[in-house]
Length: 109
Length: 355
Ligand code: SF4
Ligand code: SF4
Image (cartoon, rainbow over all chains, first blue to last red; front, side, top):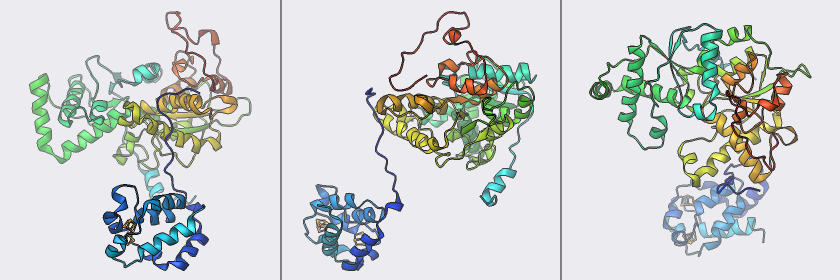
């Protein structure tokens, strides 16, 4: 195969047909507040871990809805459970519990 | 599909295209990518159809590539364009036809900007006089060369020696049409059929006996995109765009791709080689690619021009399987002979891509 010095970039296409509704309901059963997140990004703005890694709770919730749960779990690996996000969330979501629930529900390890 | 709403409105919209008397402006890059296309356009319109198409050696680039690469300011581009228009008027024409889609989009953008900002038009008028001592003028009709071939499609069909039909099966050839983004995505009313239902190439294919392939990524960009191609580090994005289109059209097994832009046939042609040689994937039957031709080349084939005179040997994807399907006679020994009979050089064989 020839190396041209550039190549195909991975597709960023989101296939919503792959969304696992049963799994999402499983998550919502233990943490119903996942449904009320309005993706404001306040949690991401204050995130301690986010300063040094790509951790973003807002993005992780979106990834789950976009059928990319592996990305969400990976992103939350660096979370220190400091709880700063729960203090700013305008929806009053128990974010630490949500983070633990996401990891527990979608983790394949 | 329910034929209503926007699609119905656009199917009834007719762009006004005068029948004759045009000032013709060439494209910088088409002359090097597919050198015979513009000569074929002039031969068909002037000699076969008897139209008055004038061109002058004094016209220059429109500046579009520099403009879209952010290397020259808009006012400079506008002055270059004003000079082209002034040459048209100086030679007694008021209908302007250009070969390039980038130019066409830029001319539309410039005319629209002048309409909205008359003070800018006045400044360009002054620039033109100071720099070139030419009188400012604007075309009455601004047309892309594919509009004109679309207009003449039935006249071409009347002189056709063959159709876009597989002579072995009698079936119409399956054709993918790809419209350059700058043709009507920016100013829908300037294109035949608008941005979402452009009919300019479809009309030609239907008139010449082919069948259009409607596939999911039909309106996706070819991937040229100026900066993403010019900078090597970004070229993967260009390649991925084209790859997305090919993956989408592949299940429909197209025989041919027809395009009306300088960049599109180039990228739809050359990136097939890059995809094949870097991943092993080919999109035509038996390791071949899908030929990507300009509308002039397709018109030329239909009208019986020799494929080597049309410059089909300058394409990466070998046209032979298409020529065999259409029943076009050609001499393989003459493929790489120039007009003077001298060898113009042959490309090295590919590892994965046949042709
Ligand atoms: S609990 Fe985790 S996600 Fe929330 S602010 Fe702290 S480190 Fe960031
Ligand atoms: S702060 Fe709360 S509502 Fe805003 S994105 Fe984060 S979890 Fe969602």
